[in-house]
Length: 144
Image (tube, rainbow, N blue to C red; front, side, top):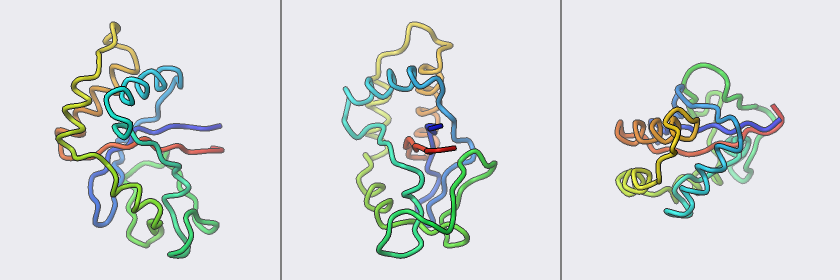
């Protein structure tokens, strides 16, 4: 089963994925949010496969030795122990929009008519993370 996680990036050196990441279900609501974000900018809510964040070797993206489980409590820290960030992930992160540009674009996303919908809650959380100084990505976790 595939899961998608709205994920704050708390720090880049080392990379720290916030413990308050949110599993996004139902998938249909996530697709609505992603479509709205894509209308504003194709890189506004970038998605990346969680398994490719890791590296066993500087020339390889993905790991056969370590698995990443985003449902674990706590921040995920890529400091080499146990997680080493892949060069593919570094390139992905280098292409993220600036925080202010992202905030302006997210703020401009049309609100759902249902303020209690998952889509509306995710948008609010996304804005809160941006306001607190975090960048935000969507991670795809396969086969969990």
